[in-house]
Length: 321
Image (cartoon, rainbow, N blue to C red; front, side):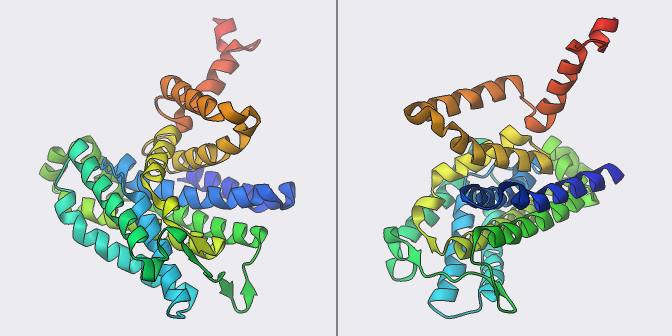
């Protein structure tokens, strides 16, 4: 547990000093997106990595949180913070209701069901023009503020988003190291064995599905109030697949793996701009190579890589053998 505390404190220090290193600019805006994607990746990893339940509809919950919060504040004049709470609660309630029938399914059947949910939500975002603005999007969403302090630039939004991200990471770490976390891992390994040991697998799967949806909705609300504009294109099937990729590349059943995956797959397209028309090819090749040589994800692959390098250096164990 002491090691986990040190890891979290190190992460918090890195997050705190990054704005001083980059001194604002475009990269700060990218780091805001890294924080939002990290929330989403952590939420999905709780469901996929720990409970073993695949979901291809996370972008739908992300969009529901963004649209509900945006509509409540722009159309009905509700305080943005209250709108975020209402949006998260509404999305959690919907997830809880649909979780019971959907989570009876397993494997690719569950994947198809959650894919269907995501597609339905995407269609609603496009067709409910009077509320969502349809394909043209919803604009005029106000920035968040605290006692008159307005989060209206990239540096302020960075600290706001990453403060929320760190809080979600901390709560998730506490969850996965608790009795509930052990029960989730037992369901992942063998649901039958978990039931035999007295775990209410069905209810627990619905609960983690609901929690994952709530966190995704909160991330959506932060996205809406940070950007000031949302459109259905941001919440499509492709983004759900990208979130699954973040979790797998970062490392299943690892909160810090979710963070690494979100950082890599958010920054990688920016770093590959130098390749111009070939950037998508290089992007795909890198993902293939990482999947082949780091099957456990970055969270396992990076330490293994450093260990291999140390063995090759003078004085390493390979040379001493």
